[in-house]
Length: 289
Ligand SMILES: Nc1nc2c(ncn2[C@@H]2O[C@H](COP(=O)(O)OP(=O)(O)OP(=O)(O)O)[C@@H](O)[C@H]2O)c(=O)[nH]1
Image 1 (cartoon, helix red, strand yellow):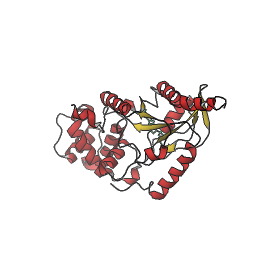
Image 2: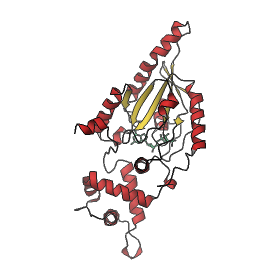
Image 3: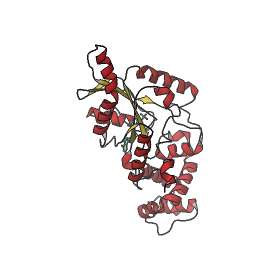
């Protein structure tokens, strides 16, 4: 897989600077992670970037992840001392919980202000996360109306103002866009199959080949059920052909349109139509398996 063209060092420095400016304005940071890949979707410098601001971890797209693993991740982050919540930004599940965690985390900051004789004010928060993790969806959800644009392509975010949520919380409507870890190829692969990096930066054929191998090893029954396969072919091209055949991806002469089959497989995997998957698993839990 090629390197992520949008995140060379110059862009990282700029993103860091912009986030640094916004951080000065807030009491609490909400770090959005993809519940399917809580490690791979994290930013390598998040500790340095957020410094001493209280940080809440929200495991978003929990509807796409395996519930049991999300529970284990929640426990894992809690034992690391974080406030953590499983979230579904699109449906809104978990947002109430998130808001109350933000208010709790900011309470000491507000108390300090009050102790200095400054009038109590609402808690201020901002959202941070890598592309496509659901930042705009969460803002929309909290806003209650779809006035912030969301897109299923990475890199679509805009605007800046405070959104008032109830009486006690103000959210910066510009999320901080963090760059993903792209050096580790296993991480890059997980980012590609979950849709966190733009299509143009990876080779689809190569990535789908890896996805087929992963599905065969861990989620074979999803393939048989979704595509009505009686067996899982040992060869990835044969397996892909079977997926294409079941979806009627035919070219003239009766050949299977493998490229179309790749698109279908990727889209159905990403949208959870194949089933719920968790691709990063906390070490403590795997040890006790
Ligand atoms: N299934 C599911 N999809 C989600 C969830 N949250 C966001 N999405 C989808 O993920 C895609 C990306 O969401 P956005 O809200 O645009 O993500 P973003 O982090 O703002 O993306 P950038 O603007 O690229 O930084 C969209 O297709 C959303 O519908 C969720 O909780 N569950």
